[in-house]
Image 1 (cartoon, one colour):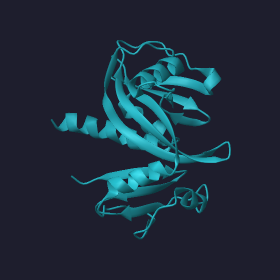
Image 2: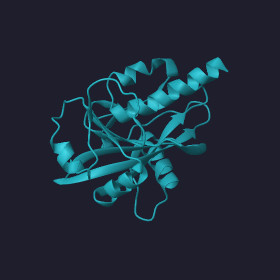
Image 3: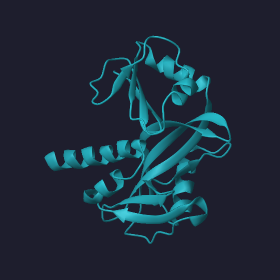
Length: 210
């Protein structure tokens, strides 16, 4: 089965694959070499929109090597759907986002995802489903280059509970959005959140076709 991984670097993207996918936009191919993530990150200006493509027959090992040589921050979050079919989004630091947070020591991923969603939005999650995505993005934290690995889970709540944004975590809004309103989020969010929104749209389109 073909393998593809995406690592977001501000507005740019590194695609790791064991095949040559069709990609639109500004694409630069990286030759077969060891990837220095920090060096690549620092070579990109913040507002650049470049897709880097690295194709290797053993791409799983390439990703393992990157994870082994970079400081990893583990996080978990959720895509929450209410009883009327709306999705939960938060507004944090001038961007639309999904609730997520750092996994505590010895905490299981699913437990962390539930805790973060409930803490950040003031709700009780009634259903915890399967993992829907694992995303990666890079940044500097306290002068140290890090790679955040976030695991996202499908979640559900009964009816339409009131949302209480966790302001101490810089969350100024928590809202329910109809799937038809997702363009509002896509106009001002992070590329990896756009990737998850695309999963919602594909799922909705599939149901319509079925």
